[in-house]
Length: 492
Image (cartoon, rainbow, N blue to C red; front, side, top):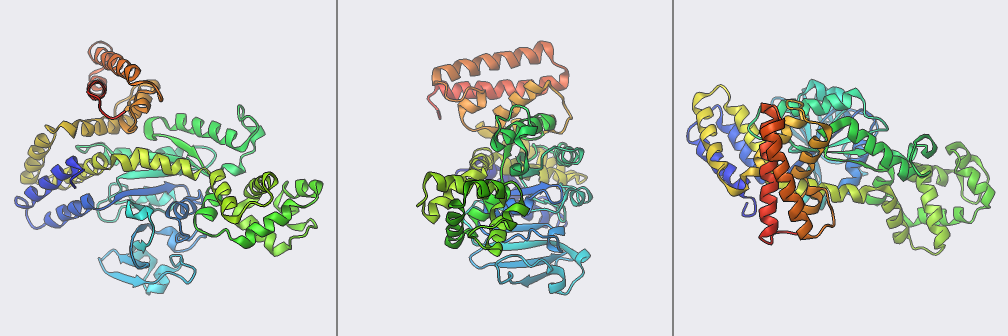
């Protein structure tokens, strides 16, 4: 943890705590220590059939999470890096039953039946998979929102996303009450802790199903409509999410998992040569695509629909129109670009992975505070340890995380524009993005940071309630530290 000063300090606090608490708390403290050493844990949440597992497969780069309804989709599955693929069925009594993946490489849909146990006896699944992403992130695939409501996110042993330090929330075309309630539950479960909750990034999936003409300001394109809807949902969810990004989950899964083959590319090349009127009609509906006469047989067309849907087929045909001899690899890359997944990966890296020290330290401190509650010796030890930790130069990030907890949980309310500014300052990593002026010169950034620091200090003194003033002082300090960093020639 040489590059994680906050995690290193929390690690020391945990080891000190182990010398002062009884045996009943020791295992839980060791669990916090283990999580500090582990990759960042990101829970993928959302409503039933929102496309969570499809997105998980696309991110991991392998089709390992079943997408059809079954026993597996009713359970939490934690995907971690492993040199040998396997899945462990973890029972509520602590027993573990090891299983292999299905021949097609997916987690068995009937895991409980195959393990010879009742579904109600299963706590969760632990799947070890070879994947570059999983070397950096642990991905937690969750059931629908109903299951999350029955198992609060803060649960240390059996909660739906126990141990998660960040959330990737999957939305469909409109953010509903249960989306907001699920995110509120997450905030409420962590708001009383010493540090803030995980960062929440949201994706608007299935944007290829949006009719652009039904969305004002869409510019007539699917992605224009997706961007408009994503912005609307970001406003509807307020400060509960850092951002909402549009994505075509099916297309991303097909391209990233290797499901798209040279045979599929050949079929698309043949379709590209179909008579213009027939081709236009085929792209109007799935029925017409599979029934109109053309040189590609029906089963192949059904496979293309399963892999790409009509949107992806249309993207492929337009790419082939521009370059009829396009190689399979380049066609796959073009389709992957049309899925929007690259932007999600970049955002995950910028918002989550780049801030792993503060996210993991904040979650660990929250867990320690929860464990110590009611144990006088442990509570004093944790409080004293946190006071020492907050003297570290990097510790202001924890105060920012706590402030964002109060805002995103609704404990403290600010006008929407101020909430958005605080979230941006506390979650972005590039100085220009943090102050809302991307691409600005260092001189311009320095001036903005100093001006906003002064504004928030004035707001704390003259325009805020006591609870708002607490947030404002934290934001003022964050701007001032950024100003110091910029004037000292820190990161651009």
